[in-house]
Amino acid sequence: MKSIVQIFCLVSAFFLAGSTLMAQQPPQGGGTENAPKKGDIYKRKNIEERVPLPYHHLEEKDIVWEKRIWRVIDVHEMINNPFAYPPKPFITILTESANEGNIPIYGTDEFVDTIPMADLLSKLSRVDTIANIDEWGNPVEDDPLTEKREDITIIREEFNPENVTRYRIQEVWFFDEENSRMGVRIVGIAPLMEIRDRQSDKVLGESTMFWVYYPEARSILAREKAFNTASDVDVMSWEDIFEMRLFSSYIMKESNVYDRRISDYMKN
Image (tube, rainbow, N blue to C red; front, side, top):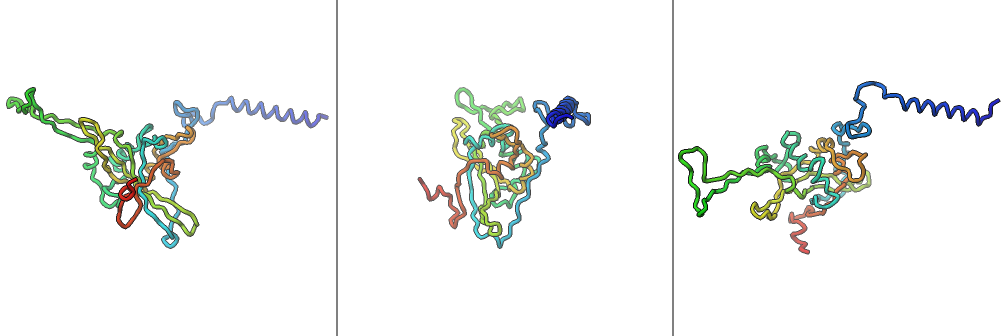
């Protein structure tokens, strides 16, 4: 009679041989629907199918404290680099979605009046005219024999995503008595575009391009891939970036009776 050790060895060898044979078999089902994309070693989940998780429902009677905050995200900080670099700069995602009509854009952070598409396109490209002068400094006159204007040169400047180096975030912090916890909800996002002198390329200031109401953009951002600096395995979306607060920022303003920014009363 075989010993228990011999029986165990035979069973182990049987399962090992079966596993080896199964590993050598080609995948069942045929076709390439389960095959990984070129460049990958396994089939990844399609980020275009993601949907944002619904927020926990809040009741007015449960909110015992609330404060509205405005923050600034600077893309020059290392943790904020994904805002400006591939797979796609964040400003490009916003402008393409607005141009395609997927998300509305607003002129102020009260999210009342939407910006017409013509106004958005004017922000994304600028047309200037420069008067032509001859070598003696005199204005060049039109040639009456041709229809081409000789006195001016038309310059079209296309929008450069690199000019958007900061974003403004409006959010609400609150204390939920029902769950006994502090919470935060992002309300809006605004890209800030640098205004540069055409000749010296010196930064003269910045302007708010538009505001996006974040709850209206969550479904779009959930399907847009963002670079994960920690690991290539976990595919992150832009909704993950904001909901997990994987960004660095500083507070520029809180709700106050004078509607002042912090820089207005804290000079140092």
